[in-house]
Image (cartoon, rainbow over the protein chains, first blue to last red):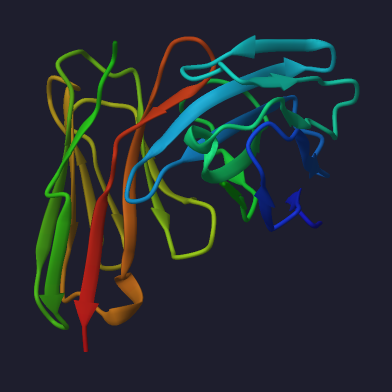
Length: 114
Length: 110
């Protein structure tokens, strides 16, 4: 069981470029999440999904897009990267969406936009 | 908004000392989770509390959920360098997702 895997680990983008952050989980979890974590801060929810074909906005969705075509994969797309999107991005999954259920996090992708 | 406030923001202590960190909200939680995040890694769940007044222990860590379910605390006894990390509390938003506090960064000096 690899758990939640994310690629790439690091990336530097120029302003206006686009990229996709990949996230895969092998635990057959229905719920998947994307968070960003700015230096010294907690996590802010970008988008989440309750199952294949279903996605919903979180707290900070502007500038991002997601899709969920399979249970395993939940890619995050950045269009027209901006310096404000410099952050560490974490993908997570959980079996059920209620707050008492554990979220399993990937190791993160550190993104710098210059 | 269902904000979670954590205090203190930073804590630097010597090995062997005790400490308590806090997580507070103006609204009632249905449940609360505590996570620890080590540098360069994702958060890892420590505990979930769901009942007002509940106390859970995990080795040297004691977690308490307030009677009114608006606050929680984490107490560490005899801190060790391995306890160093960012401690995050998180609550259910009611939309099948979590809201995280901004965290307490703990540094335990040997």
